[in-house]
Length: 189
Image 1 (spheres, rainbow, N blue to C red):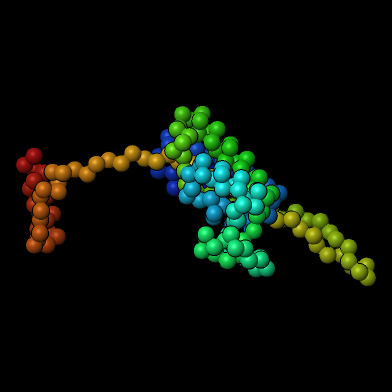
Image 2 (cartoon, rainbow, N blue to C red):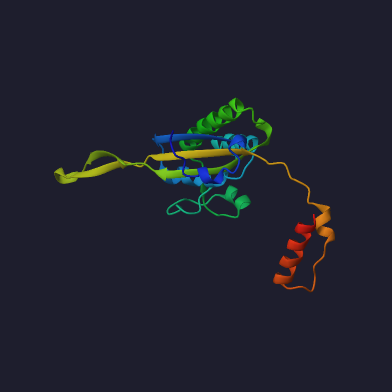
């Protein structure tokens, strides 16, 4: 069993589904920006967003790795100025989202309530090739693959607050007095 980097975030393992891809041949920097744009979205909303990105109807805002990235007017809706439409990264992350969705289905988690809890993108070892330059020189020609982990989670049910504890008002007392009252109340019960 592999250890997930974001496994500690999953508070309830019965309500979470995971998927991971290793040594994926797509740019790390592009994938990081796609992951940042998707984190926190509902799964159905993420699917439509990625479909719009592939059709160039919506943009992925580039915030961290934005050197040399052109400006796009579509980035205004994300309060950013720079953006791109990284189709290959979208294709890879769509496959992983579908895999995580089927893992959730196998665990009998409701698919309509799934949200993307976390996406971790790490750099994989660079793939080395060579390119030939003028005057007989050779330069490196490296690829920058990545590892990706996706955690989907269903929303937990909210438990209503206990009204009895709200009725006991301990105003005007310091911490020690409040603790003493609590201990006396627990002994009496």
